[in-house]
Length: 326
Image 1: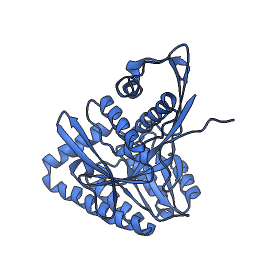
Image 2: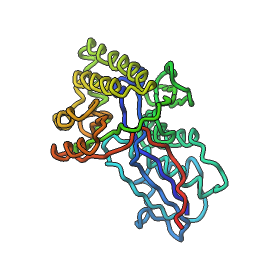
Image 3: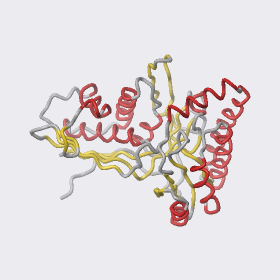
């Protein structure tokens, strides 16, 4: 038996602007995906026959990355993330699967988080027909606060670079980390609208908006400036100013049309108890996030407003092997 866990992620700043060369800042959250693997006499996934074509992330890791040729495997998945909510559930699955399989085939090896992030990114790209940002997989693997951009921003620690050949040409990213001071009394509370977040549609919609109204590029540039400002405040531990930057980012995201009535409803419901509140991810559905010192009150507000809350301490860890229970 081998078992591994990988967390989900939340984007604090930079949604959509990252597509146009601006940085994006993401943090890992406590909820995530746990994968357990054990040798068996038949291939199975959660007790059902495993059909490779229906599970491209898992199949890619098994066949293309590890070229696994051992005995059939029994694979079990436990997820505490909302699916299709912009919380990086597929990236967490890829990372947890990769870590668990590594532990199974080579239990003496040490888990290499950079290699795991690359493996997860490869699985995401394979499943998304050659298009995938490393944001979700890098944040899930490394944990903490991760910056994805064209180059490593000042005040961050460069970790690795990623390249992907997409149908639109070669894409390159720099993945860095932000060292955040110990923060005891601040939480992230995610609020799921119950509506899936259509990432591809939202990205395409912003692209069409910028073509029809080039002046809207100013909003993209403003999101980039807000992200750099938010990064500085994160590094100094000034969470009031981080919250202010989140609010400013949300104003710009509204102007490029990626918010929704459901997201605005949850944001409005939590504002009075939040340092900052905004959508997180592609928008159009999915989740909002509140940065708060009163997580229970914010969670209650989300529930009353019709959303589903998920509370996380700010700055959780990354992917890890889970020790077997005695």
